[in-house]
Image 1 (cartoon, rainbow, N blue to C red):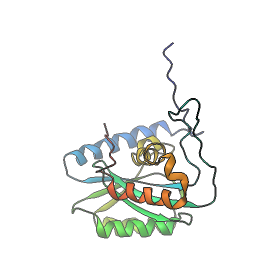
Image 2 (cartoon, rainbow, N blue to C red):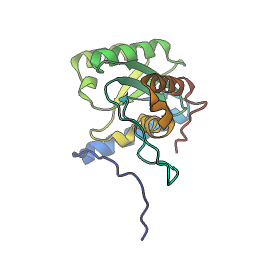
Image 3 (spheres, rainbow, N blue to C red):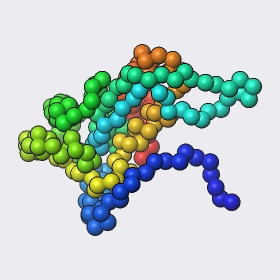
Image 4 (cartoon, one colour):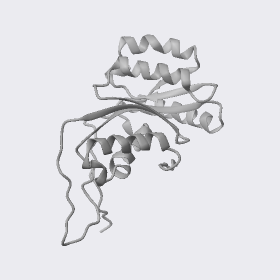
Length: 205
């Protein structure tokens, strides 16, 4: 019947304004072309969280010995990341909630330590913490260091490539055995963040 067995994904209730969406996509495509020609570097930025509840609902297992994972809740590691097309990632972690101050401090550090000179564009969504007065007051200062903020159209997480990185972490690179303890989860995440582009790669079309 042409069906495939796959995960049913969540989607947002609201949709982007079609005119804004078309304009923003056109601008993003132009930036991507400049990135390909090395006129600038795009970094896709976003927050995500990891806890003790695994995202591994399916897996090959013996019929007579089904696998199971103990349910745990409590600790959580929140991460703000910036990822390039070239499989380079900069991550900033905290056990606390991510707010504007944390994101600003992370971008400040990124601006100081970014790997190459030249113009950099940070592609980011429209979360409230990215539109706070504190955040917007920093934009001009970052631009003086050749780092520019590009806001995606609203309700368009599929345009932010770092979403693929978070998905790979949660559904492929964090394995059932890593959920034996919180220490194992944190160590595996640290390994992913340190060796992304080497042991862990994403082929972007």
